[in-house]
Structure formats: C-alpha cells, structure tokens
Image (cartoon, rainbow, N blue to C red):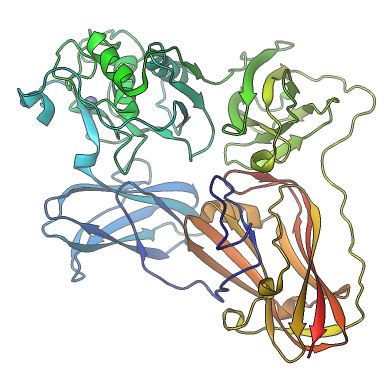
Amino acid sequence: MFRGKMLFGSLILALLLFGAFQAAAQDTLRMLRYGEPAEEILAAGESVQFLFTAEAGDRLILVANAKGGEIDPVLRLYTSEGALVTEDDDGGGKRNARLEGVTAPAAATYTVTVFNAARSGSGAVAVIVNDEEQLIAYHGGGVDSPFSADPGYVGYQLSEPWRTTNLTYVILNVVSGFPDGAIEQVIAESFQAWADSTPLRFTRVGDQNADIVIQFTNIDGSSQVLGQACPPSSPCAGSVEFDVDENWTLYEPQAYDSISLLGVATHEFGHVVGLLHSSDPSALMYPQYSPYNLQPSGDDIAGVQRLYGAGQGGVIGAPTAAPGGEDQGNAVVSTISDSQFAEFWDFDVAAGEYVTITMEALSGGLDPLLVILDANNQVIAYDDDSAGDLNAVVRNIRFPQSGTYTAAATRFEQAQGYTEGQYRLTLDFGFTDPPAGGSAGGAATRTPSPTGGGSVTASRGDLAALPNLAETLNGAFVDSVTPIVQRKTGTVRAGETYAWSVTWCATSAAALERGLRAISVTFAIEGDPVPSSAVTEGRREGDGLACVDYGVALAGWQGSSVLLSATLRLSAPVLDGISIYQAGDYIYEYALMITS
Ligand code: ZN
C-alpha cells in the first residue's frame, strides 16, 4: 500500500516505497482535538508538547494514561502566552495524570505538555483532551442534569444513530473484588438489554480501535457522577467511563449506598447507541440513577427503535475458560465476513497450563487463520492450515504466566482476504497428543537471483530532496500480510541520483516500537548487500500512522540494466494494530533499465 494511494478501509499497516522521505523525526507541535487520543513514547525525563484550541468557557478534562513500559506521566497546561495554568501527576489513579474542572478563560490555543517522571527506561502514554459538556454524565442522587431541569422535554431524546448495527466493544480494565469474568458478564447483559428490542449486535474484541471503549477510571470520587458516555454524534463517540470509586454491586443493589453496575452500564450504553436523557422518571435514561430502574422501559425502547428499528440483535461476549478445567472443551460459533474479518476472543489460563485452540470452518469457503496474542497484543503463536482442510490449530501452547490471552479468529490474508463463512473456535485444556503429520505455519523465503549486469553506488543522502525510485514504478507493490516476492520494472537516467526507500507503519508509536523488535530491512544491488552505513533511518507520525523510513541514495548508474532488491524481514509475526504480518521475507525488487 502506498502513501498517497491510501485505500479506504482498515489497511492500516502500510508498506510504502513512495512519496516524501523525512530524514529525521522533527520536534513538531502536534494538535489535539477533543476526544481524539494521541499516543507517544517517552524516555525517562523526556516530555512532549501538544496544542489544542478551546472556546471560552469550555470545561476541560485532560488525561495522560500510562499505556505500558516505564512511564509516570505529569500533565501541565499552559496559556497561549506560556503561563502555567495547572498541573497534575497522579490524579488519574495509579500513575496516571488527570486535570479537570479547568474552565478555558478565553477562546485560544492552549499548550499541554506531558513529562515522563519515571527514573529510567521509557514507556507509552496516551493523551486526551475533552470538553466536559461533550461527555454525558450519569449522576447519583442529588445532582440534576440540564435535561431533567428543563420541563420542555417529554420522554426520550435522541442523538444521531451509528451508521451500522454491528458494533464492537473493548473492556480496557475492570474493578477488583468480583469473581473473574463477572463484570464482563454484566457488561454483556447490559448490551443485551438494548439488543433485545433492536437489530444491534455487539461483539467484544481485544482491540482498542473498537467502536465502544469501556473503562473504569477516577471521575469524581464516590457518589455524584457514576459514569459518563459519549453519544455517536460527539467527537468522543463510543467512550464509556465508570467511576472506579463507587461502591459497585453487579446486579440488584444489596445496600442503600451500593450502585448497580447493570443499571449504570445499561444507562451508559443507551447514550453510546444514541439516546440522550429522558424526562420520563420511569425511563432508564432519566438522568438520575434509581436502584429500582435497571432495565430499559417502554420510553427507552421507543427511543432506541426510532434510531435502529425493531429487531433482535445479540451480544458476542467472550468464552471463559472453566477454572482449573481439564478436558473441558469450550467452544463458540461465529462468522467471518468482509465487514468483520477478525474477531477477538479472550480466555483465561493458569501459568504452565497447556491449551489447544482450534478454528474450523463450518460453512462458506472460509479459510480460517488463528493468531494467539498476549495482554500486550504480542503475537505468541499463529497457524493457518495445520488442522487440515484449511482449518487452523495451535496445539499445546504452554502459557508462561497466568492471565488473559486473546485468540484472534480471522481468515487467510485477513483484510485483503476474500473467504467468508461460519466458524467454530474451540479451546481444549490440558496436553493433547498431536496427530501424525500436519505442518506448521510460516512461509519459506526465496532468494532473488541477480540479473542485469549493471551497477550503481549506494550512499547516505538527503533522500527527501531526491526523486524517489517509486516514481519509476510500473504499477504498485501490493500490501501483503504473508511473505512475498514482488518485482517491478522502471527506467532510470544514468546521471540522476535517486532515493530508494522502504517504509513500515503502524497505528501508533507503541505498536510501531513493538513491531520493530522483529523487523529488519536490508538492501542489495545485483545480489550484493548494501552496507548498513549507507542506510538512513527516520521516524515520523501523521494521518494516524507512526512510520519508520529506511533508505539509500543511488548514483553512478553503469551498464544497461540493474536489479535492486529490498528485503523487509520479520523474525516473528508482527501486529501493526489491525493486521498480523506473518514471519518471513517480504522482498521488493526493481528491475531497472538505465538510459542516458
Ligand atoms: Zn446519562
């Protein structure tokens, strides 16, 4: 996939040999928009600066959450003149920073900095700025909302609906003190309450790019605001936060001061699908929490059916492993299609336990591909066809640590694939004897043979200033998720200097850093490797991608033709944020004619 020819859709990871080459990461100021998070990797003691514009009176909420590694974010907010307004270190719980209740005094561009106060190492941080008005808070007793205060409202009020009835959700964290999987179960039941009367279908995934992102976080201490959510029309659409400090109970409140997660979650998910507050006191969408009001009422159902029509949807939650289970199978049936080419299933295992996971096609021409991820979305195993008949199996994986892992059920070539159909995913606990035969995943690599007989000299250079070899392409290289050799032809001028580059991108700086551990890029001219001292490497971010460019300058063309070969080698499967690229060599060749 080429920069400037970005395909619409979810082909996020781009292998790119085209367009501007930026020699080094610039210390540019990045703009933040309300509700749109930015991720950054910061070394200990390092800081990053962002700008955002606010209107006078905007009530700001700024959050910097640690995403992994060694990070202790500190948030500082400055006026456009550079005066410090306020700062916070750990107000977001754990080591997260949170600033709220700050009212923008004037319409202006403000600066926010995030500093990593960790003593050593480096880590990833996510920064988000919100306007409180754009979050809808669900209040405990005693606090009114603008909606209930206005006698002009009768019954339900609607926001915009989603453009699809197939929504994905991710649960980023849960509160402690409940049995494993209990909160996930309540969340699934809360979605089901809306799926019972509409065609809405909610699928739990393990991917932060889900439509609906659910987390427990510090909001305002116990009582008052219980949770808040963003309707589909808002910039933070799909965001749901529950206040970590409430005295949560799962279903019916057991005491006067306990708060039903089922009631609050169903209310918040009402906002997420497009309901605003109702003025009907019997409605679940009434802005004040009631322990007797845990399910959608007639008013709520009339509202949600105005948005999506009547129907019967459903929830695909997660299969939960039987604790300590041996020989207890655990299966789920679902469907892979062009619109849902990957589904993510979480499961829990104990340290040292063996699990065999099978994905078999039940209908259609589906070619199942199975990928197992750890909690950091690192690929730990994958398989395409080892179970026979195109079915996938990962046998006897032994997990080093107890915890939640994810089985990504997808299809061969994933987003670029074309097979569809129903599948069954089965987890079998305990060691199982593999059958005779069967083959592991992974593709053989091919060494390109030098041809042409000409030559050219590679060196470091100002690659951004040079014409890029991609401009000589006869058609584009494809973005493949399996190892591949591709060759393109073109014509170069003997006296000209060209930039020859390969770029790897991911959805975030953190995903890029994880992937780069397994990635190396080498260049060869007529089969002879280009020394690494001639290769320039540069990072850049933009358009929702974090990228690294590798490249050389080519000059002094001799002979009539020359073969160039760039090899992008993945020593392990690499997840870019959406697709998984299988281990192996991705080879991009140019067979170039040299003219004077
Ligand atoms: Zn509400």
